[in-house]
Amino acid sequence: MELPQFFFYIGYILLICHLYLLLTSYKNKRTIIYFAFTALLSLWVIGVCWSKQTLNPTFLESAAAGILGWAGWNGTDTLYHIALSQMLKTYHIPSTGIDGLPFTYYHFGSHFIFASLSSLIDVPVLELYNMGYPILIIPVFFQLTFLAIKGIKDVVSHSNSSPIGLISFFVFIFYFLQLVRHHYAGGGLGTTFLVSESSTFSLIFFIYSASLVLTYWKLKENSFVGIFLLFLVIPVSIIMLGFMKISTFYIFEGILTYLFIRMKAYLKIRNICFLLLNFCSVAFVLFYSLETLPWGLRSHLKPSLDSTGLDPFSFFQMEFKPLDFALMYYQVTLLILAFLLCSKIKSFKLLSKSFHRKETLGIEVVVVSIIMGLIPVMLLKLYLPNYMYFLFVQSFLSILFIPAYLKENFFQIKNPSIRWKVVGISSLVLVVVFSFFFISIQKDLNGIVNINLRTRTELAHDKSIAWTKIDFLKSVKLLRQVQSKQLIVDSITGNPILRILTKLKELDSLPLREKNESLIYADLSEIPMKARNPTTTLFWVDFSKVNPNWMLFCYDLPMIIPALSGIAMIDGMPCNCPNLIGHGYIFYADKADCKPIESMEELKKKIKVSGIKQIFVFNKTTYVFEKILIN
Image 1 (spheres, rainbow, N blue to C red):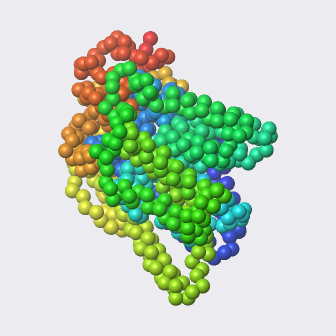
Image 2 (image 1 turned 60 degrees about the vertical axis):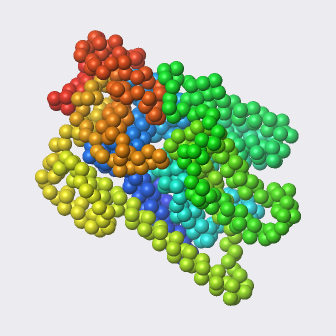
Image 3 (image 1 turned 135 degrees about the vertical axis):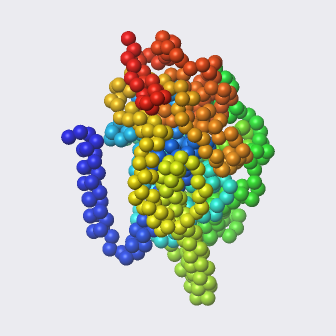
């Protein structure tokens, strides 16, 4: 039995065991409510991941139709992450593989995990991103989140058996869904941060690292477990957190430093050792993940227009919206109010006493995360959503602490008239909240089916179509009609763009050792891709005013080949595309001339990777990547 099949059967056995435990352990009827809303939350997650034109089960088909961003930012971003993971899997080097394998200084931890999982369970990286992430990774994130809420609630209530009640559960859903939408929601993407794989992984390791540090501080000095955590487990966990997301790592280190001083941990020698090891972990992460260091750019090839640098208060000139900026902190505001009300703190004197008794540590942690997040935003030049990645952590921490501070008997008011008013208002709020919840789910499910239907129609007719939003049931009905038409099915199967993408994906199924000894050459001008006219507006960039052909050939097309094939390219940098922003292009030299390679000798001279034994060359007539051995 092969290893992937072994994991397949183990998964089914564990699923059956968990279902049995689930059905036999819970006898309280209230748990039905939890299960119902968990199912709805699952639908919402699927909708978030598959309706935003980034990830999709029909990724190849939608990409061929130009729906996944051939002329917009979404497609390039997705292809960049997949390509980086593919190069880690094939060559064990963090690179995008556009022209050789230059080292990409980036937080490539999530890409490393996807590459490792792909090798372990023998599932292509492309499918792991499109289906494995929402089905496997996000449930792990929610599991750890609820465990963190339960742990914080136990600490606050001084009990090991304090449950997460319905009120806390509803509050969690209300906060997590970000129903109070604003411009800065979800790391500046206008939606939840779950659309960013690296953000989700960073929060997973944030919780994991924090739990390890707390466990270490509770242990007795010189214990074997404590030494093991100090010298191995905690440094590795912190390093992994740093490679998941630099912004989250930075916030974590700020909170850790504050707590180190606040709890007077510096009075113990073992904690000084902890501090030194943590400093080494930080230095290691910064050296291998940051493109820009205090002494300048890591890349000596060319300057980057999107490089981070000192530019105080540029945020206010570029993307500051006062009302939306204030709304970004509504979660922490309600957290502070919940703490003051549930703790019955009515004066500054009582608050001061609570501070000295360290009862306000949760609030302090969130406030520190806000301050730490604002420092780089106010001082550095950060483009696109980068500045928001420093600010969204405080929202997540507020989500963790509010259910812990909110007592389940908070609404058990003795005065009948006041109680009914509170219950009435709360019920109205819940109705409004979950109405928006259901609308959001329906909208996202519509989006998934519409993308699928639009993909089939555009591929068949080879042109963009005017599309209007329709309801879910009508979408499914139309989808069945399109699928039943053999002419359209044949048109999709014979689509030349889809044929090329399918051939690239077939190369990804080659043995890993063979891929490691291979490269791909393709004259990008010979690939018959067609740019679509986008309507996306992101921050200050209106993509409807950008030349779609420029976006296609300068950004998307070079990245699609290593992303789908898992094999690096030779001479894959686009022609006449200077000063490309983002996506690792800073680590490649601009193309000197636009003349295609015409001989095998010329091709061999351009090989920048050692150990190469064969090259796959694109044939523009047959749309096949022909294998050529190198003597």
